[in-house]
Amino acid sequence: MPSKLRIQRIADRIQQELSVMLVNQVSDPRLNGVSVTGVKVDRELSFADIYVSAIEGQSRSTEILQGLEHASGFLRTELAHRVELRTFPRLRFHWDITPERADHIERLLASLRQSDQEKQVKK
Image (tube, rainbow, N blue to C red; front, side):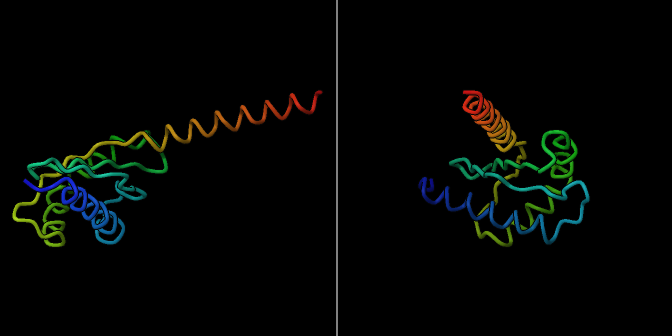
């Protein structure tokens, strides 16, 4: 079984290569503006859980995940050529809501700062 460090290196490499492929090689219009936010590979190297997000947010999540599932065979084959492993993990795609949550928290903090400034001005 590979070490945790090796698994992390494999996950990082898959994320890097997949990000480049989505920009340069994939022509599916459903996948425009998709970014890979994280990759987790299990200890047996059987599965790679790939987390994706887009600028438009969750409104396009179903469409994007369908596009990725449709292209998963091509993506896995291309990644297997770029990342040398005895057997390449199967790809599973998941929507990452972290960027949307971060944006929501930023807006809440901005509104708190604004209300705090308004209170300071009234004094």
